[in-house]
Amino acid sequence: MTKQRGNRKTRIGVVVSDKMDKTVVVRVDQVVKHPVYQKYIKRKVTCKAHDEQNSCQIGDKVLIVESRPLSRDKCWAVRQILVKTTNV
Image (cartoon, rainbow, N blue to C red):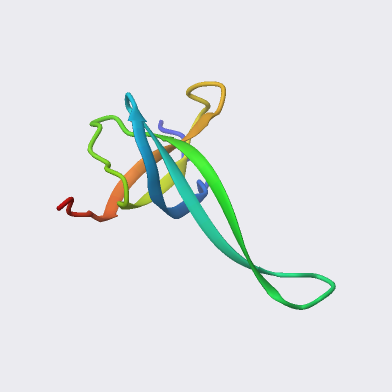
Protein backbone atom coordinates (compact mmCIF):
# COMPACT_ATOMS: atom_id res chain seq x y z
CA MET A 1 0.00 0.00 0.00
CA THR A 2 1.11 3.54 -0.64
CA LYS A 3 0.86 6.07 2.13
CA GLN A 4 -0.90 9.33 1.40
CA ARG A 5 1.17 12.37 2.31
CA GLY A 6 -0.38 15.39 3.93
CA ASN A 7 -0.97 18.61 2.09
CA ARG A 8 2.32 20.35 1.38
CA LYS A 9 2.71 24.11 1.58
CA THR A 10 2.87 25.87 -1.77
CA ARG A 11 4.09 29.37 -2.56
CA ILE A 12 4.21 31.52 -5.70
CA GLY A 13 7.24 33.73 -6.14
CA VAL A 14 9.77 35.28 -8.50
CA VAL A 15 13.26 33.91 -9.15
CA VAL A 16 15.89 36.44 -8.06
CA SER A 17 19.04 34.31 -8.48
CA ASP A 18 19.95 31.24 -10.53
CA LYS A 19 23.73 31.21 -10.10
CA MET A 20 23.88 27.95 -8.12
CA ASP A 21 23.74 24.50 -9.68
CA LYS A 22 20.22 23.00 -9.45
CA THR A 23 19.19 25.70 -6.96
CA VAL A 24 17.28 28.97 -7.38
CA VAL A 25 16.49 31.72 -4.90
CA VAL A 26 12.80 32.64 -4.95
CA ARG A 27 11.33 35.82 -3.44
CA VAL A 28 7.81 35.36 -2.06
CA ASP A 29 5.78 38.53 -1.40
CA GLN A 30 2.96 38.64 1.15
CA VAL A 31 0.58 41.41 2.20
CA VAL A 32 -0.26 41.26 5.91
CA LYS A 33 -2.24 43.56 8.16
CA HIS A 34 -0.40 45.15 11.09
CA PRO A 35 -2.05 44.00 14.33
CA VAL A 36 -1.95 47.40 16.07
CA TYR A 37 -2.04 50.01 13.30
CA GLN A 38 -4.38 48.10 10.94
CA LYS A 39 -2.22 49.06 7.97
CA TYR A 40 -1.31 46.63 5.19
CA ILE A 41 2.41 45.89 4.95
CA LYS A 42 4.38 44.06 2.26
CA ARG A 43 6.53 41.25 3.64
CA LYS A 44 9.21 39.57 1.55
CA VAL A 45 10.70 36.13 2.20
CA THR A 46 13.47 34.50 0.18
CA CYS A 47 13.60 30.71 -0.12
CA LYS A 48 16.11 28.44 -1.80
CA ALA A 49 14.38 25.90 -4.02
CA HIS A 50 15.60 22.80 -5.88
CA ASP A 51 15.51 23.09 -9.70
CA GLU A 52 16.45 19.68 -11.10
CA GLN A 53 16.72 20.65 -14.79
CA ASN A 54 18.25 24.13 -14.24
CA SER A 55 15.36 25.51 -16.32
CA CYS A 56 14.51 28.60 -14.24
CA GLN A 57 15.90 32.02 -15.10
CA ILE A 58 15.91 35.32 -13.24
CA GLY A 59 12.46 36.93 -13.39
CA ASP A 60 10.46 33.72 -13.88
CA LYS A 61 7.29 33.35 -11.82
CA VAL A 62 7.35 29.87 -10.25
CA LEU A 63 5.29 27.63 -8.01
CA ILE A 64 7.34 26.03 -5.22
CA VAL A 65 6.28 23.25 -2.85
CA GLU A 66 7.62 22.17 0.50
CA SER A 67 9.91 19.12 0.45
CA ARG A 68 12.27 17.26 2.73
CA PRO A 69 15.46 19.12 3.67
CA LEU A 70 17.89 18.82 0.76
CA SER A 71 20.66 20.87 2.37
CA ARG A 72 21.19 23.15 5.35
CA ASP A 73 18.84 25.86 4.03
CA LYS A 74 17.06 24.29 1.03
CA CYS A 75 13.69 22.66 1.77
CA TRP A 76 11.56 23.75 -1.21
CA ALA A 77 11.31 22.40 -4.76
CA VAL A 78 10.18 24.07 -7.99
CA ARG A 79 6.99 22.38 -9.13
CA GLN A 80 6.12 24.50 -12.16
CA ILE A 81 7.18 27.61 -14.06
CA LEU A 82 4.06 29.77 -14.33
CA VAL A 83 5.41 32.69 -16.39
CA LYS A 84 8.66 32.41 -18.35
CA THR A 85 10.62 35.62 -18.96
CA THR A 86 12.24 36.44 -22.26
CA ASN A 87 15.74 37.87 -22.04
CA VAL A 88 16.27 40.53 -24.68
